[in-house]
Length: 456
Ligand SMILES: *Cc1c(COP(=O)(O)O)cnc(C)c1O
Image 1 (cartoon, protein in one colour):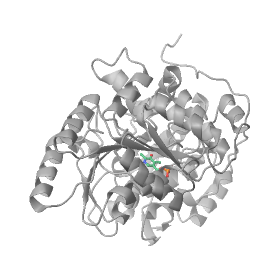
Image 2 (cartoon, protein in one colour; image 1 turned 135 degrees about the horizontal axis):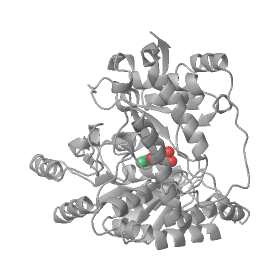
Image 3 (cartoon, protein in one colour; image 1 turned 90 degrees about the horizontal axis):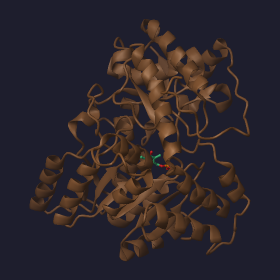
Image 4 (cartoon, helix red, strand yellow; image 1 turned 45 degrees about the vertical axis):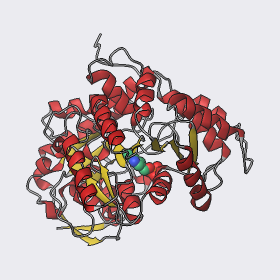
């Protein structure tokens, strides 16, 4: 028996039909969508790897919890259950629910950043950076250089470059500029779903304590990061995912979370904190933007599903299967000579468009063009993570040019992912036919969601 196949640690008891529309209709659909996969209709998509955000399959246990929603305006028992889950798994005493991750980022940024501050980050996440900037802060990259090297096989591309961070702090002090907090993301999405190591987190924590600058994590993909620490870092092999998650949290002052990822729900998020004063401040803001501090823009049933998802996400068998499923897809592509980002990330396989369509220059949006071509070839929806997502106005950008194949949790089988790999391998053989794009419309912020293109 092939030992490498790990069967899913669940069975399926409800199904949703999907359909592959004919190629001619796919060509029409992508043109109508302005060659932007965000503008496609879900019913025109066969296998949807756009994102793993809010696309998880909930368990029978979570669905059962949905029927126990206590829809009281204040003090719902589902909030108590959520608070207990966060206390137990992340081990933070204070919890503020929000409608999703960006709601949490908005509140954290508005509460802590003032105009002229600088915020060090390990690369960036789109919404997190926008909220830091809208609050008047200046985003500063302190990621290790391997983070943007698609071909580097470094195991912890999510690390912060300690020397860069240190230099930034000294410079800020000299110039009298405030650093309100250090912002660190788990399993850095923009680097390809790449983890930080516990050793690096300790180093960052020591700097944070030495200079009295709080450390706040974007813990949206903390469980996947914990899995990589367990698998790759010396001394953690015998630890459970839950133990590693709690150790990570013990090294920081608070977290923001989009529960639409790790926590296996379709909507939800939260902030968790250790400092009571910071908690009071953010609690005042949540009632302005999200909803009362015991529901934060969510129904009681959503809070319950999130509470139950938090316990399920730290199941060792579940998370091993999830990450291995991503690894199996990436492994097949890699074996066929498709250029991908290595090591393979926790939630997604990233195609390196600069090498896949090397005849398309960056100003003709290679990753955007490749994502559109994959849809036409196979009905599979993916997402651009390159200059369209990365560039902000007219700043220079020579970073990564990636297409993300994101695997929703507990949704697709190995056969689905084999189909995806077959389609990409077939497309790679005729990659010379893929044409670059011209941008004909771009919104001012987060342009990748709504930008439109024409074929060159
Ligand atoms: C998805 C995500 C967010 C934003 O969360 P939403 O729930 O989409 O608002 C923030 N940070 C990271 C790392 C994410 O993956």
